[in-house]
Length: 293
Image (cartoon, rainbow, N blue to C red; front, side, top):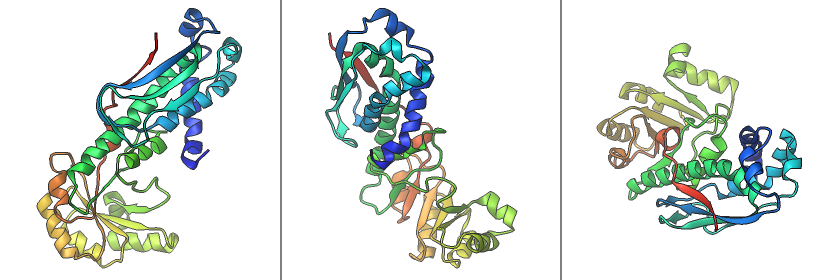
């Protein structure tokens, strides 16, 4: 089990337990336990597929979920599910593509259906949106980054999907980089004392500072930072910041970024562009799961 799947396992197990409760009353009542079936995951819109490995994990831990909620006995005669991906993670597909299939006990297939689709649709939606931003910045050196604006408890899934869509992951959480923002600056009494305090307490931790104007930028440039975040600046302001920095410190544009302005922002020469919309409000990709008749 690779690192990503291992990290996702508890969340997948909890999602199944949340949905199953003390038993899938519909499937248990309508489907004989020995009935076997095959179902296809069908993309009903074009996009980038992400989350197939999570769907496979859903089926893999389904029996454990049954045990933990105390309803394994109701499903013991239903055959285990086998999962087969038909496309690669991160692959762009057209509407009408069968992206995967699953076969086994019909009760199990339908009990796990919604959890499997929830992960697959959300991750594919994020990957699809990320690719749109990446495509909009082609020809520039700018890298599209995600943020911490992820669904609570689903950060591993959201960030994996961004990477599969061609973006790159920013810091994972509060622990792997010091990002000194406006509130930290206000509480510490300025950019320079805030940076000094981070270095005194956490030597070697990467440091990024958020600046709101060119005056703050000039102060930050003298502090030998790992990155400077240009907060809610226009493309013209970002271009001037790039000129002032002259390559001394990598610059990240953030705030108010959308598909209408990201091309112009990338053209300024900024090194990276972080986009909260990749994960905080992305529409799910339309994918269905249908049993074959």
